[in-house]
Figure 1 (spheres, helix red, strand yellow):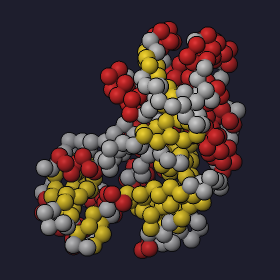
Figure 2 (figure 1 turned 45 degrees about the vertical axis):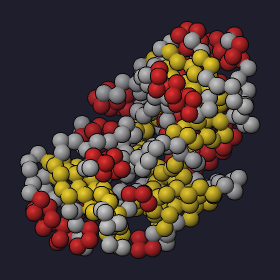
Figure 3 (figure 1 turned 30 degrees about the horizontal axis):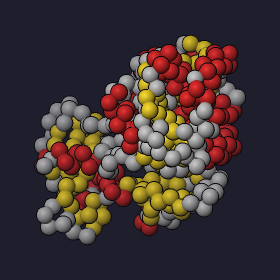
Figure 4 (figure 1 turned 30 degrees about the vertical axis):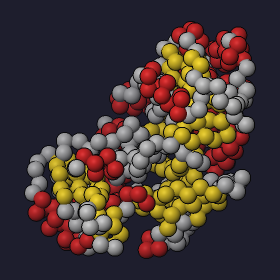
Length: 418
Protein backbone atom coordinates (compact mmCIF):
# COMPACT_ATOMS: atom_id res chain seq x y z
CA UNK A 1 0.00 0.00 0.00
CA UNK A 2 1.11 3.55 -0.78
CA UNK A 3 -0.33 6.94 0.06
CA UNK A 4 -0.34 9.60 -2.66
CA UNK A 5 -0.92 12.69 -0.55
CA UNK A 6 -4.25 11.75 1.14
CA UNK A 7 -5.19 8.96 -1.29
CA UNK A 8 -4.48 5.38 -0.23
CA UNK A 9 -3.56 3.04 -3.08
CA UNK A 10 -4.04 -0.60 -2.11
CA UNK A 11 -2.56 -3.71 -3.66
CA UNK A 12 -5.90 -4.13 -5.44
CA UNK A 13 -5.41 -0.74 -7.11
CA UNK A 14 -1.95 -1.72 -8.30
CA UNK A 15 -3.16 -5.11 -9.50
CA UNK A 16 -5.72 -3.29 -11.67
CA UNK A 17 -2.92 -1.24 -13.21
CA UNK A 18 -0.76 -4.34 -13.77
CA UNK A 19 -3.71 -6.04 -15.48
CA UNK A 20 -4.04 -3.07 -17.83
CA UNK A 21 -0.34 -3.33 -18.63
CA UNK A 22 -0.64 -7.06 -19.32
CA UNK A 23 -3.46 -6.46 -21.81
CA UNK A 24 -1.20 -4.10 -23.77
CA UNK A 25 0.84 -6.13 -26.26
CA UNK A 26 3.91 -3.88 -26.08
CA UNK A 27 4.09 -3.75 -22.27
CA UNK A 28 3.28 -7.44 -21.88
CA UNK A 29 6.39 -8.24 -23.95
CA UNK A 30 8.71 -5.73 -22.28
CA UNK A 31 11.55 -8.13 -21.39
CA UNK A 32 14.82 -6.17 -21.90
CA UNK A 33 12.90 -3.47 -23.79
CA UNK A 34 13.72 0.11 -22.79
CA UNK A 35 10.85 2.53 -22.01
CA UNK A 36 11.01 6.25 -21.29
CA UNK A 37 8.11 7.10 -18.97
CA UNK A 38 6.67 10.58 -18.51
CA UNK A 39 3.29 11.02 -16.86
CA UNK A 40 1.66 13.38 -14.39
CA UNK A 41 -0.23 10.41 -12.92
CA UNK A 42 2.15 9.39 -10.11
CA UNK A 43 0.30 6.12 -9.48
CA UNK A 44 0.85 5.09 -13.10
CA UNK A 45 4.53 6.10 -12.93
CA UNK A 46 5.11 4.05 -9.77
CA UNK A 47 3.20 1.07 -11.14
CA UNK A 48 5.12 1.12 -14.42
CA UNK A 49 8.50 1.24 -12.64
CA UNK A 50 7.55 -1.65 -10.33
CA UNK A 51 6.05 -3.58 -13.26
CA UNK A 52 9.22 -3.18 -15.34
CA UNK A 53 11.36 -4.22 -12.38
CA UNK A 54 9.35 -7.43 -11.91
CA UNK A 55 8.75 -8.07 -15.62
CA UNK A 56 12.36 -7.60 -16.73
CA UNK A 57 11.79 -4.37 -18.64
CA UNK A 58 13.98 -1.26 -18.53
CA UNK A 59 12.55 2.03 -17.28
CA UNK A 60 13.64 5.65 -17.70
CA UNK A 61 11.27 7.78 -15.55
CA UNK A 62 11.18 11.50 -16.35
CA UNK A 63 9.96 14.38 -14.18
CA UNK A 64 6.23 15.02 -14.51
CA UNK A 65 5.48 17.98 -16.73
CA UNK A 66 8.41 17.44 -19.10
CA UNK A 67 7.15 18.69 -22.51
CA UNK A 68 6.65 15.89 -25.02
CA UNK A 69 9.37 17.16 -27.45
CA UNK A 70 11.87 17.24 -24.57
CA UNK A 71 10.75 13.79 -23.39
CA UNK A 72 11.16 12.42 -26.93
CA UNK A 73 14.65 13.92 -27.15
CA UNK A 74 15.64 12.23 -23.87
CA UNK A 75 14.08 8.96 -25.00
CA UNK A 76 16.19 9.01 -28.17
CA UNK A 77 19.34 9.96 -26.26
CA UNK A 78 18.81 7.16 -23.75
CA UNK A 79 18.39 4.53 -26.47
CA UNK A 80 14.79 3.83 -25.46
CA UNK A 81 12.63 1.71 -27.73
CA UNK A 82 9.37 3.38 -26.69
CA UNK A 83 8.10 6.60 -25.13
CA UNK A 84 5.18 6.30 -22.68
CA UNK A 85 3.67 9.78 -22.31
CA UNK A 86 0.38 11.14 -20.97
CA UNK A 87 -1.66 12.46 -18.08
CA UNK A 88 -3.62 9.29 -17.31
CA UNK A 89 -3.48 5.52 -17.75
CA UNK A 90 -5.57 5.57 -20.92
CA UNK A 91 -3.56 8.48 -22.29
CA UNK A 92 -0.29 6.62 -21.71
CA UNK A 93 -1.48 3.28 -23.13
CA UNK A 94 -3.16 4.78 -26.20
CA UNK A 95 -0.20 6.92 -27.24
CA UNK A 96 2.83 4.62 -27.02
CA UNK A 97 5.41 5.98 -29.46
CA UNK A 98 8.11 3.85 -31.08
CA UNK A 99 11.41 5.67 -30.70
CA UNK A 100 14.10 3.39 -32.13
CA UNK A 101 14.79 -0.20 -33.20
CA UNK A 102 18.11 -0.71 -31.44
CA UNK A 103 19.09 -4.05 -29.91
CA UNK A 104 17.41 -5.11 -26.69
CA UNK A 105 19.18 -4.61 -23.38
CA UNK A 106 21.24 -7.58 -22.24
CA UNK A 107 19.80 -7.07 -18.75
CA UNK A 108 16.90 -4.96 -17.53
CA UNK A 109 17.92 -1.61 -16.08
CA UNK A 110 16.79 1.61 -14.47
CA UNK A 111 17.97 4.62 -16.44
CA UNK A 112 18.76 7.93 -14.76
CA UNK A 113 20.42 11.18 -15.80
CA UNK A 114 23.32 12.62 -13.83
CA UNK A 115 22.70 16.04 -12.23
CA UNK A 116 24.58 17.95 -14.93
CA UNK A 117 25.91 20.51 -12.43
CA UNK A 118 29.43 20.24 -13.85
CA UNK A 119 28.65 19.55 -17.50
CA UNK A 120 26.23 17.86 -19.87
CA UNK A 121 24.05 15.32 -18.00
CA UNK A 122 25.04 11.71 -18.65
CA UNK A 123 22.71 8.77 -19.27
CA UNK A 124 23.39 6.17 -16.57
CA UNK A 125 21.99 2.63 -16.51
CA UNK A 126 21.86 0.41 -13.41
CA UNK A 127 20.55 -3.14 -13.44
CA UNK A 128 17.54 -3.98 -11.30
CA UNK A 129 19.74 -6.65 -9.71
CA UNK A 130 22.16 -3.93 -8.54
CA UNK A 131 19.25 -1.89 -7.23
CA UNK A 132 17.88 -4.89 -5.30
CA UNK A 133 21.31 -5.26 -3.70
CA UNK A 134 21.35 -1.56 -2.79
CA UNK A 135 17.87 -1.75 -1.26
CA UNK A 136 18.72 -4.79 0.89
CA UNK A 137 22.00 -3.25 2.06
CA UNK A 138 20.28 0.07 2.78
CA UNK A 139 17.62 -1.61 4.93
CA UNK A 140 20.19 -3.61 6.89
CA UNK A 141 22.51 -0.62 7.34
CA UNK A 142 19.79 1.87 8.28
CA UNK A 143 17.74 -0.21 10.72
CA UNK A 144 17.00 2.91 12.79
CA UNK A 145 14.26 3.72 10.27
CA UNK A 146 12.62 0.28 10.24
CA UNK A 147 9.56 1.54 12.12
CA UNK A 148 9.47 5.02 10.59
CA UNK A 149 6.94 6.10 7.97
CA UNK A 150 8.73 7.64 4.97
CA UNK A 151 7.17 10.91 3.82
CA UNK A 152 8.72 11.31 0.37
CA UNK A 153 8.76 14.98 -0.65
CA UNK A 154 11.06 14.55 -3.64
CA UNK A 155 10.52 13.31 -7.21
CA UNK A 156 9.78 9.61 -7.66
CA UNK A 157 11.41 9.97 -11.08
CA UNK A 158 14.77 10.38 -9.26
CA UNK A 159 16.59 7.46 -7.62
CA UNK A 160 16.58 9.16 -4.19
CA UNK A 161 12.78 9.16 -4.06
CA UNK A 162 12.20 5.98 -6.07
CA UNK A 163 14.83 3.71 -4.51
CA UNK A 164 15.74 5.08 -1.06
CA UNK A 165 12.27 6.40 -0.34
CA UNK A 166 9.74 4.14 -2.06
CA UNK A 167 11.47 0.80 -2.73
CA UNK A 168 13.19 0.73 0.66
CA UNK A 169 9.82 1.35 2.34
CA UNK A 170 8.22 -1.51 0.41
CA UNK A 171 11.13 -3.80 1.33
CA UNK A 172 10.63 -2.87 5.00
CA UNK A 173 6.89 -3.49 4.78
CA UNK A 174 5.90 0.03 5.81
CA UNK A 175 3.41 2.25 4.00
CA UNK A 176 5.18 5.25 2.41
CA UNK A 177 3.56 8.62 1.83
CA UNK A 178 4.44 10.08 -1.58
CA UNK A 179 3.93 13.83 -1.59
CA UNK A 180 2.67 15.54 -4.74
CA UNK A 181 1.54 18.77 -3.07
CA UNK A 182 4.87 20.41 -2.23
CA UNK A 183 3.40 23.25 -0.19
CA UNK A 184 5.65 23.33 2.92
CA UNK A 185 2.70 23.67 5.31
CA UNK A 186 1.00 20.66 3.73
CA UNK A 187 4.21 18.61 4.03
CA UNK A 188 4.49 19.48 7.74
CA UNK A 189 0.85 18.44 8.19
CA UNK A 190 1.54 15.03 6.58
CA UNK A 191 4.73 14.58 8.62
CA UNK A 192 2.84 15.25 11.86
CA UNK A 193 0.06 12.81 10.95
CA UNK A 194 2.53 9.99 11.53
CA UNK A 195 4.08 9.66 14.98
CA UNK A 196 7.36 8.21 13.72
CA UNK A 197 7.76 9.79 10.30
CA UNK A 198 10.97 10.40 8.38
CA UNK A 199 10.89 13.17 5.78
CA UNK A 200 12.87 12.47 2.60
CA UNK A 201 13.55 15.73 0.79
CA UNK A 202 16.17 18.08 -0.66
CA UNK A 203 18.20 20.56 1.43
CA UNK A 204 16.44 23.57 -0.13
CA UNK A 205 12.95 22.32 0.73
CA UNK A 206 14.09 21.03 4.13
CA UNK A 207 15.42 24.50 4.94
CA UNK A 208 12.12 26.13 3.97
CA UNK A 209 10.07 23.59 5.93
CA UNK A 210 12.27 23.91 9.02
CA UNK A 211 11.69 27.65 9.20
CA UNK A 212 7.98 26.90 9.71
CA UNK A 213 8.51 24.33 12.46
CA UNK A 214 8.42 25.45 16.10
CA UNK A 215 11.42 24.32 18.15
CA UNK A 216 9.07 23.26 20.91
CA UNK A 217 7.41 20.77 18.55
CA UNK A 218 10.19 19.20 16.48
CA UNK A 219 9.30 16.66 13.81
CA UNK A 220 10.49 13.09 14.32
CA UNK A 221 13.17 12.59 11.65
CA UNK A 222 14.55 14.19 8.50
CA UNK A 223 16.71 12.67 5.77
CA UNK A 224 18.64 15.05 3.50
CA UNK A 225 20.40 14.21 0.24
CA UNK A 226 21.55 15.70 -3.06
CA UNK A 227 23.92 18.29 -1.64
CA UNK A 228 25.07 19.35 1.81
CA UNK A 229 22.88 21.44 4.05
CA UNK A 230 24.58 24.79 4.57
CA UNK A 231 25.96 25.22 8.11
CA UNK A 232 23.24 27.71 9.11
CA UNK A 233 20.52 25.44 7.77
CA UNK A 234 22.14 22.39 9.36
CA UNK A 235 22.17 24.00 12.80
CA UNK A 236 18.57 25.12 12.40
CA UNK A 237 17.29 21.74 11.16
CA UNK A 238 19.02 20.00 14.09
CA UNK A 239 16.84 22.01 16.48
CA UNK A 240 13.64 21.31 14.50
CA UNK A 241 13.91 17.50 14.35
CA UNK A 242 14.59 14.75 16.87
CA UNK A 243 16.77 12.90 14.35
CA UNK A 244 18.68 14.33 11.39
CA UNK A 245 20.16 11.96 8.83
CA UNK A 246 22.17 12.75 5.73
CA UNK A 247 22.91 10.36 2.90
CA UNK A 248 25.39 10.56 0.06
CA UNK A 249 25.50 8.86 -3.30
CA UNK A 250 26.00 9.21 -7.02
CA UNK A 251 23.98 8.27 -10.08
CA UNK A 252 26.33 5.44 -11.06
CA UNK A 253 25.97 3.43 -7.84
CA UNK A 254 23.06 4.89 -5.85
CA UNK A 255 23.35 5.48 -2.12
CA UNK A 256 26.94 5.18 -0.86
CA UNK A 257 26.75 6.19 2.80
CA UNK A 258 24.31 7.31 5.49
CA UNK A 259 25.14 9.76 8.26
CA UNK A 260 23.38 9.07 11.57
CA UNK A 261 23.48 11.27 14.69
CA UNK A 262 25.65 13.68 12.75
CA UNK A 263 27.18 16.74 14.40
CA UNK A 264 28.93 18.21 11.36
CA UNK A 265 27.15 19.47 8.26
CA UNK A 266 29.72 17.80 5.96
CA UNK A 267 29.43 14.36 7.59
CA UNK A 268 27.89 11.80 5.25
CA UNK A 269 28.35 8.76 7.44
CA UNK A 270 29.33 5.12 7.19
CA UNK A 271 29.33 3.42 3.75
CA UNK A 272 26.74 0.76 2.97
CA UNK A 273 28.28 -2.64 3.80
CA UNK A 274 28.11 -4.06 0.26
CA UNK A 275 30.40 -1.30 -1.05
CA UNK A 276 34.14 -0.78 -0.67
CA UNK A 277 34.82 2.96 -0.38
CA UNK A 278 38.21 4.70 -0.31
CA UNK A 279 39.05 8.36 0.26
CA UNK A 280 41.41 10.60 2.25
CA UNK A 281 42.46 9.89 5.84
CA UNK A 282 41.93 13.39 7.29
CA UNK A 283 40.87 16.90 6.21
CA UNK A 284 44.42 17.84 5.23
CA UNK A 285 44.84 14.73 3.09
CA UNK A 286 41.50 14.65 1.32
CA UNK A 287 41.24 12.49 -1.78
CA UNK A 288 38.68 11.50 -4.39
CA UNK A 289 35.92 9.24 -3.08
CA UNK A 290 36.22 5.96 -5.03
CA UNK A 291 33.66 3.16 -4.78
CA UNK A 292 34.03 -0.51 -5.71
CA UNK A 293 30.77 -2.46 -5.91
CA UNK A 294 30.08 -6.19 -5.58
CA UNK A 295 30.78 -6.64 -9.30
CA UNK A 296 34.28 -5.21 -8.76
CA UNK A 297 33.31 -2.20 -10.85
CA UNK A 298 35.26 0.91 -9.79
CA UNK A 299 33.28 4.17 -9.71
CA UNK A 300 35.26 7.39 -9.41
CA UNK A 301 32.79 9.87 -7.96
CA UNK A 302 34.71 13.06 -8.83
CA UNK A 303 34.02 14.11 -5.21
CA UNK A 304 36.72 14.94 -2.67
CA UNK A 305 36.39 13.70 0.91
CA UNK A 306 38.00 11.96 3.84
CA UNK A 307 37.29 9.47 6.62
CA UNK A 308 37.47 10.64 10.24
CA UNK A 309 38.74 8.58 13.20
CA UNK A 310 35.34 6.89 13.62
CA UNK A 311 35.26 5.70 10.00
CA UNK A 312 32.60 8.25 9.02
CA UNK A 313 32.94 9.80 5.57
CA UNK A 314 33.03 13.59 5.07
CA UNK A 315 32.38 15.46 1.82
CA UNK A 316 34.52 18.47 0.92
CA UNK A 317 33.91 19.39 -2.71
CA UNK A 318 33.37 18.29 -6.28
CA UNK A 319 36.71 18.01 -8.09
CA UNK A 320 35.26 20.10 -10.91
CA UNK A 321 34.24 22.80 -8.42
CA UNK A 322 37.70 23.10 -6.87
CA UNK A 323 39.32 26.45 -7.64
CA UNK A 324 43.00 26.64 -8.55
CA UNK A 325 44.47 30.03 -7.65
CA UNK A 326 48.10 30.19 -8.76
CA UNK A 327 48.60 26.52 -7.91
CA UNK A 328 46.77 26.68 -4.56
CA UNK A 329 43.51 24.77 -4.09
CA UNK A 330 40.39 26.58 -2.87
CA UNK A 331 37.38 24.51 -1.80
CA UNK A 332 34.15 26.53 -2.29
CA UNK A 333 32.52 25.18 0.89
CA UNK A 334 35.35 26.52 3.08
CA UNK A 335 34.84 30.03 1.73
CA UNK A 336 31.04 29.76 1.84
CA UNK A 337 31.16 28.73 5.50
CA UNK A 338 33.05 31.92 6.37
CA UNK A 339 30.82 34.16 4.22
CA UNK A 340 27.69 32.74 5.84
CA UNK A 341 28.98 33.74 9.29
CA UNK A 342 28.91 37.40 8.25
CA UNK A 343 25.92 39.25 9.66
CA UNK A 344 22.93 39.56 7.28
CA UNK A 345 24.24 37.03 4.73
CA UNK A 346 21.34 34.65 4.10
CA UNK A 347 22.74 32.50 1.31
CA UNK A 348 25.99 32.27 -0.60
CA UNK A 349 27.71 30.30 -3.34
CA UNK A 350 31.38 30.40 -4.34
CA UNK A 351 32.53 29.38 -7.82
CA UNK A 352 35.43 29.87 -10.20
CA UNK A 353 36.03 31.97 -13.26
CA UNK A 354 38.90 30.84 -15.45
CA UNK A 355 41.37 33.53 -16.46
CA UNK A 356 43.38 33.80 -19.67
CA UNK A 357 46.52 33.12 -17.64
CA UNK A 358 45.21 29.64 -16.78
CA UNK A 359 44.67 30.50 -13.12
CA UNK A 360 41.20 30.64 -11.58
CA UNK A 361 39.50 33.55 -9.87
CA UNK A 362 37.33 33.10 -6.78
CA UNK A 363 33.81 34.46 -7.37
CA UNK A 364 30.95 34.96 -4.91
CA UNK A 365 27.20 35.41 -5.19
CA UNK A 366 25.35 36.22 -1.99
CA UNK A 367 21.84 36.98 -0.77
CA UNK A 368 21.18 39.59 1.93
CA UNK A 369 18.40 41.96 2.98
CA UNK A 370 20.75 44.94 2.68
CA UNK A 371 23.62 45.68 0.30
CA UNK A 372 26.98 44.82 1.83
CA UNK A 373 30.00 46.56 0.34
CA UNK A 374 32.51 44.28 -1.33
CA UNK A 375 35.24 45.86 0.81
CA UNK A 376 33.38 44.75 3.96
CA UNK A 377 33.12 41.17 2.68
CA UNK A 378 36.80 41.07 1.69
CA UNK A 379 37.87 42.51 5.07
CA UNK A 380 35.89 39.77 6.81
CA UNK A 381 37.50 37.15 4.57
CA UNK A 382 41.01 38.48 5.24
CA UNK A 383 40.37 37.96 8.95
CA UNK A 384 39.23 34.35 8.46
CA UNK A 385 40.75 33.00 5.25
CA UNK A 386 44.05 32.77 3.42
CA UNK A 387 44.68 35.46 0.81
CA UNK A 388 44.18 33.09 -2.15
CA UNK A 389 40.69 32.17 -0.83
CA UNK A 390 39.32 35.73 -0.86
CA UNK A 391 36.65 36.35 -3.55
CA UNK A 392 37.69 38.79 -6.25
CA UNK A 393 34.30 38.95 -8.01
CA UNK A 394 31.40 39.66 -5.65
CA UNK A 395 27.73 39.91 -6.69
CA UNK A 396 24.63 40.45 -4.62
CA UNK A 397 21.61 38.58 -6.04
CA UNK A 398 17.99 38.19 -5.04
CA UNK A 399 18.22 34.39 -5.10
CA UNK A 400 20.87 31.74 -5.70
CA UNK A 401 19.91 29.70 -8.77
CA UNK A 402 19.43 26.08 -7.72
CA UNK A 403 18.21 23.02 -9.57
CA UNK A 404 15.11 21.11 -8.36
CA UNK A 405 17.33 18.76 -6.31
CA UNK A 406 18.84 21.73 -4.48
CA UNK A 407 22.20 21.57 -6.23
CA UNK A 408 23.98 24.59 -7.66
CA UNK A 409 25.54 24.49 -11.12
CA UNK A 410 28.72 26.45 -10.55
CA UNK A 411 29.55 25.96 -14.22
CA UNK A 412 26.39 27.84 -15.24
CA UNK A 413 27.13 30.60 -12.73
CA UNK A 414 30.62 31.02 -14.21
CA UNK A 415 29.17 31.18 -17.72
CA UNK A 416 26.75 33.91 -16.62
CA UNK A 417 29.74 36.18 -15.88
CA UNK A 418 30.98 36.08 -19.46
